[in-house]
Length: 299
Image 1 (tube, helix red, strand yellow):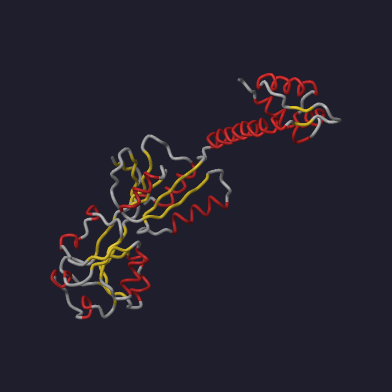
Image 2 (spheres, one colour; image 1 turned 30 degrees about the vertical axis):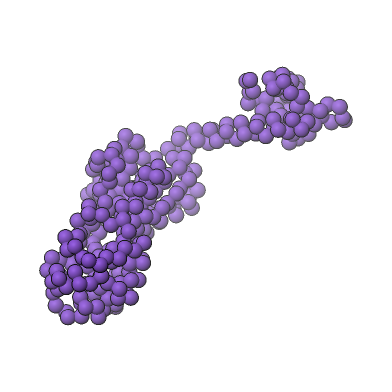
C-alpha cells in the first residue's frame, strides 16, 4: 500500500471543512484534484472511506479510523520539516544537560533561562546529580553536555576545563574537632563521624580517604550534608561557595588538620567527541568554561 501525503491531506481537509469545494480551497487545489486524491486513497486501502448517500459527503466509521492514521502521517511530516529547519539554523532539536551539584548552578541555570526567554527551538532538559551519579545519569539519559568534577569512565568525550573549585574540611562551631582551636590528629578524625555525599569516589583524591574512618554517614546531596554539619552530626568536605554565609557568621569552622583542610576540585564540561556542539550547547559551554581551559580532550 502506498498512501501519499497528498491523499492524507485531502482526507484531512475534507474532514475539517466538510465539502470538496472548501477542502480544495484550503489546499489551494482544484476541486477535481481533491476528488482524484480521495478516490485514489480508497483504491489503495480497498475501503469505503466516504459516505456519499446524503446531501453532503462525510466520512464513514472506517474513514474516521483511516483519517487518524493519515493525521499521524501529516504530523510526522511537520515534525520532520521542523527538525530540518532546526538543523539548518544550527539549533539542536534537543539538548540534555547533566551537572554535578557540587559546582555552582547559577551559570547553567542563567543561560538556560536566557535560551527559554529567547524561545529558541531547542528542547532543553537539565538534571542535577552528584559526583559518581553524574556520569550514570549522562549515559542513561543519552545527554549531550555533562559538568563533572570526576574524570569520566565514558570514552570519546571532549573535555573543557572550568574554573577550579575549592572545598574545605569543616565542622559546626563547638564540635570537638574545632572546639580546641588547635590542629587535630588523624586519631581525632577517626574518632568522629565523617559525612560524605552519595557517589563519593576515590577519584576525588580527598586526603581523608586514607584515614579509614570507622563511622561514615552517606547523604543524598550537599544541602543535606550542610544541614547535618550544622546539626553537629559530624565533619566533612564542603564546596566553599555553598557554606560562605555559614563561615562568615561562624556557624561552621574549618577543621585544622596536619594533612590540610583545603581541597581543590577541577570541574570540566564534557561533550561527545566527533560531534560539533549546536548553538544551544555552545552557549552553555561558553557560560561555563574558563578561558584558559578551552580545548582539552579526554578518553
